[in-house]
Length: 429
Image (cartoon, rainbow, N blue to C red; front, side):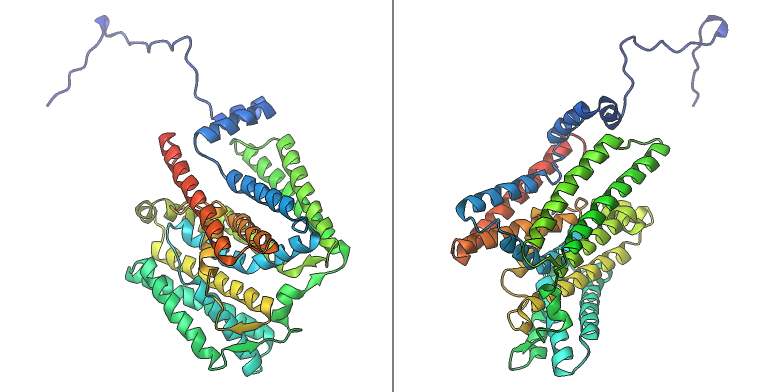
């Protein structure tokens, strides 16, 4: 088979046709935004809305509306005492939700986290109270118990190939029974109210410098991180945020941080539980966004087959994610036990599982995998806990709380589904 070559008379080279006079070279829209200044951000915001890239906007707007409604219904809702209580109460569920975020990023689910949290509280109580183990050691063993349980679930899912739904549903039942077994016939073990575990939720930094100091550290760390990241991106020749945008973002964070510090100092001070939770959020966010492991988790949530072809150890990543979920479930269980200074048969049951999953989803983590941040757990659990406390102040029954929370969750899932379809239409999914 031969291919004929055509040529002009005299075999003269053919010049490429001149580009059309009105042709426009494609430019990254993010670069245009940086060039246009703040007017460009309005254009970028509109573009993102059309493309379905809503980010955390719906949940932030929803939280503002929820707080405004409850504040208008009851003046006690926005008091320093109530807001401080909300910040402590949300930590247990929030810790569990952080682990759920990792699982949802894979597009999977873990139905066992509620039971695992109950097991952790029971293990800590049995070791510390029944066997006289130092509380710090009992706490570590309880958390490692969650890690081992999560690893077992991950093994059956990732290595054996059993569906995650079935594996964790079996885990929900098995670990619930295991918790009841180790608690014994009495069913309740009271913790030392002055012990380490109890202080997880009862200890406050009463010195006003603690809350203000944390606010200053958060603001300075955010500015330096954003500034240095912008300089690295600029040196690499990729789109970066201008200094003006970084300053505006820092000012917004400073307003929120110092407002929270003032509020905490008007009550008991800065809660230890909230400090631990914020440290966890910062650390896990760094892992997901700044490390190779985090990129592998996101890649796996986007496409398992593509990840496998790229050389990612799918089995290892899947197993590790469930180990992380088990670890944070155990940590959440310890905060739950700390709140009531006891481990009992009701731990890990009721609406805990649904609230943890709802917190991750309401906060903005996609049920379809590949999109989310651990900060979503904070936003989501703030919404759920605010609803619970707001309705409790009004004396509204628990069934109504369930219905309202379920409605918020449904609305969030609908927004997630619509957003995903919009992004596909815009070619961004």
